[in-house]
Image 1 (spheres, rainbow, N blue to C red):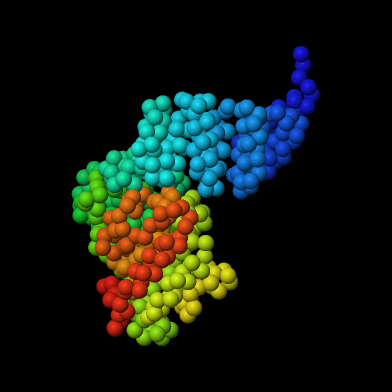
Image 2: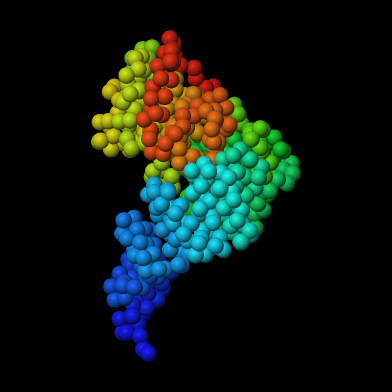
Length: 478
């Protein structure tokens, strides 16, 4: 029996959409899939792929309608459950996401992707026993499953199992394109070999905060005998990193950058250094300040604060959001500076905005009398000088917190309950990478910052305003 012409046309459109998806022409692929679903409303694969494209384009509600339709049509394809569960988790519907992943595993119990995604969900919910079971099951099914290996490493890092965690963390595949070019050019990846007399390049990786955290390994590599340690970093960090003890050249990364690989004997991605160095939780390097402001910048900011803020007030910097491109920004960033309002009830405190690119609504929502310094910051060297002139920083989990820690400046870090980043551990209020400097204030319920703000307000009220200029880091000459 021949198929109805509408079904044949729908399958033709579906195949055309697959070709367009591979070519990156998502708008045209969406059009084909919309039409395929119109002509064959029972075509579950078309609904599944359309949901994926809509989710990729930011239409979460439309994607969920498509996934729901495919599920109602009886689709048992693992990709449906994988994508649907990921969408629900990203929207904060975690119980629903768990149910979808479990339903998918009922239909496809040997699907390693589903086991890995369910493991990630459990890890983000701090249900570590279940998370480890899922991730190890994924690896039993598919021993070379990179995402499951990376996710297991992430979980181990959260638990403070640094040696195992950093080893598994090597399975990550999101480094910048220059990494592949360095490997292709034949420059050897450093994996812990003796460095006596050798030259090594530290590659740029991940965000500004990550580079601030791991640039401490410049000193470690020099202690191991490296003749020269150069570093590639984000442009905004270049000037600040020129002051790292023992650093050679500091270069700003850009996609078009061409490097002469003969300048080095080895290279390493920044976040691979803890594994290559055999770092463990008990012996992390760089526990003292390892970044410093320039003397001229520090003097300028101290003078500006002295002119703009009440004499004798406790100078507190505020940062409430990170990059919106970060996958967990929805959880880690505050909805706005208006949540800081209770802090303004504490007498004797003067606030300084550290956030750049304020919207008019954000500027209006700052605590009364806040000095907006963020708009005057040029780069992280400038920000370091401003942070050095403060008594305290209050920040969400973003680069400002790492900068304060690297400078040895007191910082109170607000952490989300869901998907807390691995470097802050699970339960303590002290930060192992910046001990005695950063104090951690953790959410207990996902999305609810009010108890955290209340705890910060009580802690701030317990502080005594300084009677003289705030203590500064040992500034270096311009």
